[in-house]
Image 1 (cartoon, rainbow, N blue to C red):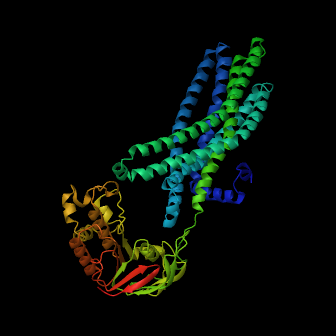
Image 2 (cartoon, rainbow, N blue to C red; image 1 turned 90 degrees about the vertical axis):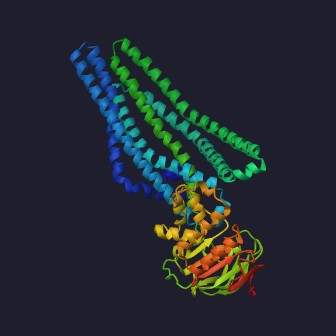
Image 3 (cartoon, rainbow, N blue to C red; image 1 turned 90 degrees about the horizontal axis):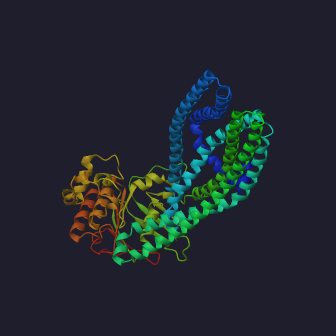
Amino acid sequence: MLIARLVDGQEPERLRAAFRWLYGFVRPHRLAILGLLGLSLCASVLALLQPWLTKRLIDDGLLARNFSTLTTIAAAMIATGLLSTALAGVNRLLHTRLSGRILFALRDSLYRHIQTLSPAFFGRRPIGDLMSRLDGDVAEIQRFAVDSLFSALSNLIGLIGALILLLKLSWQLSLLAAVLIPLDILWLRWMRRKVERETRGLRERSAEISSFFVETLAAMKFIQSAGQQAREAQRLEGFGQRYLSQLLRLQWIEYLTQAIPGTLTSLSRAAAFLVGGYWVVQGQWQLGSLIAFSTYLGMAVGPAQSLLGLYVALQRMSVSMGRVMDLRSEPPSVESPPRPKPTPALGELRLENLSFSHPGRIQPLLKRVNATLPAGAKLGLSGPSGSGKSSLIDLLQRFYDPDEGRILLDGVDLRELDLFELRRRIAIVSQDIVLFRGSLADNLAYSAPDASRTEIERVATLTRLDDLIATLPQGLDSLLGERGQQLSGGQRQRIAIARALLQNPLILVLDEATSQVDETTEREVIAAIDHLFAQRTRILVSHRPATLADVDLHFELREGRLLEQAPT
C-alpha cells in the first residue's frame, strides 16, 4: 500500500500486479542478490571506516607527533583502500551480469507476449512506440528493480553508520543533520510530480523519433525517387527539436531536484566548520574530529538524498511500468485451446456460415460464406482488390476468428486445434516477402530449421534458384543483407516458395506468389508444386487467368460471397 500511495494515477491493484510480475524476474536470482548485498555491506563498512582512520591519523599521529601510530594507521588506510577497490571491481562485474540477466528476461517475456498478438494490433500501434517500450521502458524498470535495491541498502547502512558516528563525535553539531533531512524530504515531495510529467513526455518524444526511423529507413528508395529527402530531414529536425526541448525541461527539473538539497548540504557543512572550527581554535575539540565530522555529515546527507531520490526514481519507473503493463495487458485475439485435438492429416476445408469483419469497419468482408474445399485438390481464388481474399487466408491460419460460423479442417473446428501446429501445417506464400539478415540457406530453412543441406539444395533447384545461387560469391552460404534488397522481386518470390516447400505443409496457399515472375517460370514452378503436393490441398490466389487455368475448383470472392466459377 505504501508504493500504491507513492505512485499517484495508477490503480493500487494494477500496481501490485505489476510489481508481482516484476518480482517474478528477480526471484530466480535470490542467491546472487544476497551475495551482492553482502559485498555492498562490506563496501559500506569500509567507506565508513576511512574518515575515522583519517581522524586517528591526524589526532593520534600527526598532532601527537607519534610516528609509530602514524605508520600503523597509514598502513591500515592503504589496506582498506586496496580492499575497497577489489570489492568494487567484483561488485561491479557481478552486478552487471545480474542486471543483464534480469533485463534480457524482462525483454524476452514482453517480446513473447507481443508475438501472440494479432496483425490488427500491429496495424494500430506504431512500431517505433513498441521499440521504445521494449528498449527504454524495460531498461528503466530493470534499473529500478536491481539498482535501487543495492542503492537502498548501501545508502541505508551509510546513513545509519554516519549518524551514529556523528553523534559519537558531537551530538550538538549532529542537530544540523536533523534539520537538513526534513527539508530535503519536503523539497523532493514537491518536485515529484514535475519529474513524472516530464519523464512521460520524454518517453513519448523518444517514441516519435523511433517511429520516424522505422517508417523512413524502410522506404528510403521511395523517398529518394519522390525527391522528398529535404522534407523528411525537416520532419526529423522537428522531432529532434521537440525531443531536445523536452529533455532540457527534464534536465532542469532534475537539476533543481538535486541542486537545492546539495546547496543545503554545503551550507550545513560550512556551518559545521564555523562552529567546530571555533571549538578547535578554543582548544575544546580536535582538528581530526572536525574533519571527520564534516566528512560524516556529507556521508549522512548524501545517502539521505539518495534514499529520497529513490522516491523520485519510483515516479520515473512508474511511467515506464505503466507503458509496459499497458502492452502486457493487450490480450491475444486468438489462443490455443486448453486441450487441443490432434492435428488432421488430410486437408479438407469446409466453411460454414462464415462471417467476418475487421474491427472498426462497417461493412463485413465475408457474409455467411459456405463452401467445401476438397482435400488434395488444386483450388483457385480470385476477386477484386479489397474483397477479402487475404482476410480469408488470415482466418485459415487463425490470425483472427470469424464473427460467426466456423472453419473446419477435416471436420475439426480450427479453434479446437493447437495454434502452433495449425500454422505449421498451412504455409502461406504472399506478395510481401519477408527475408531476414543471414545466408540464403538460413532464409530457405527458416520455417524448417532442422532441414538437411540436401533438402535445401533440392527445393532451391525445384524453384529455379540455381541461376541466383551461381551468381552469389558463396552460393547458398552467401549473406542476403537487410531484407534481401539486392534481389529482384522474382528472386525473392522464388525464395519464399522454396521456403514453403521445405516446410512441407498440409495446405499450401500461394497468395499472388508468382505475380513477379514470367509466365514460363510460373508454369514451371506451379508444375513442380503440383508434383510435390499432388495429394495435398493447394490454394492459388491470383488475378491472372493463366495462373488459375488448371485448377480443380475456382471460387470468386465478390461482395462478401464466395461464388464457384465454371472451370476454364
